[in-house]
Amino acid sequence: MRSVGLLFLAMAFVGCRLPGSTPKERNAKINQDLLERLSAESLSPVEDFDEQGYFDELERLYADSPPEEAGGDAESAPPINPYAILGATSWPVGGELFVKPYSFPKGMGASMLDLATIYADFPVVPVREGAGLPPVADQDPASAVLDLRASFDSEAYNPPRKEAITTPKLVDISDWIFVRARPEVITKVEQFFDLFGAQKRQIEIEAKIVEVTTSDSLDYGIRPIDGDTPIFELPNSGSLVNQVGYSFGNTVVGGEALFGVRSVFDGVKFNALLELVADHENVSIISRPKVAVREGARADIVNTTNIPFFQIKSINSAGNFTTQLSFQSVGTQLYIIPRVVGDDTIILNIDIEVSQETGTAVTFAQGGDGPEISVPEISTRVARTVVRLEPGQAVILGGLISERTATRETRLPLLADIPLLGNLFRSHLWVKEQTNVLFFIRPRILQGIDFQDY
Image 1 (cartoon, rainbow, N blue to C red):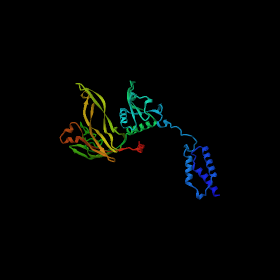
Image 2: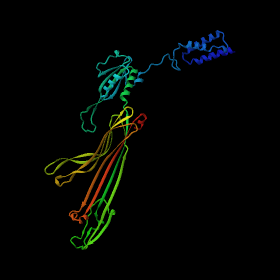
Image 3: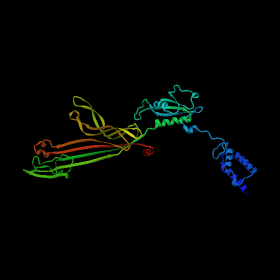
Image 4: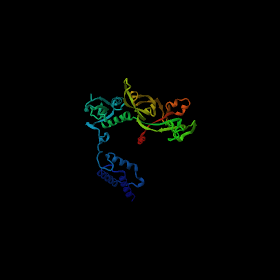
């Protein structure tokens, strides 16, 4: 019984050790041969069974068995599809060689061709505009032919805002390099292009712009009590002039007057309000723009208002002139060009301009008596610098301060020129405004998952 058990154990072991690595017919024949040999020989007891010798015999029997795909009976693996590696933008040109094109920004194709010729770890045959292209039959299977076609991709451009049909302008868009090689060599060429030509890093520019405006104003003068009460009231209604009233129209209202005055001089009543109002405003405007820009490109952050004005083109001897409507951008303009040095050091080229309208530079009147044309006066503050920042650092630019003082006087002709008494016929408005702009700029190199925010 022990010998029969050993026989069934051997048969079961043979089935476990042969996991379908040969055709079914070959497996059946080997199992039959093994069973006959074990039956013909004298069986040894289990304790005397040579286990190592049994394994050596199995290894010898199956050493020459051809491998197969797991779970299948195919004699050989299916051929590799080169289009699965190279993509649809490739085509065969003979033998095992394929051609695949790669595009580069205009002017970059020549630099990439020279770089690959010097540093690539595979033989490179440089060709320009197809001149000297070697025949397919003469190409080394381990090499890659790189055919540069500069300005290959062009486009006819026509400005879309122009109403009339014009002759389009041919604009060069990109260079192309056509690679001819075996699929595995083209894969190496593509890795080289990706490493040295396509890995332009993106940089996030986060700016915090704080604009603080402080304004002080003082308004003082004389105004009527109301619309029915004259400032000077004569007692005799039959007089030639029985009342005098006027209004200077400054910024305050009757309820903001300092106090009222009512007096009588030889029968003439004086009714008025003395205005004296001071005002202080402190306004803070904060904006936090954030943009992503390619290394070496320019990021613009602009917040401006176009101020219209008439530009004087010509003036004749009679004082008549011709004008042209123009616009001037006034506000905050921030321009930044980032560059990466090494792995994580960023160099920022910063140009900042802050401008505002501060007054009127000149005023013209048509013919001396016509409508007035005013030309605005623009105040501009500019800061330019180049800074080098390590990861996590930020740059702060400030001190762009402008100050504007305006004084306005409203007066009654003739009466305002009377000494001392003339102050009763005047109103003054004084305004002082100061603006301070600060910039907080922080760059950061974007990595992988960061682009999900853009």
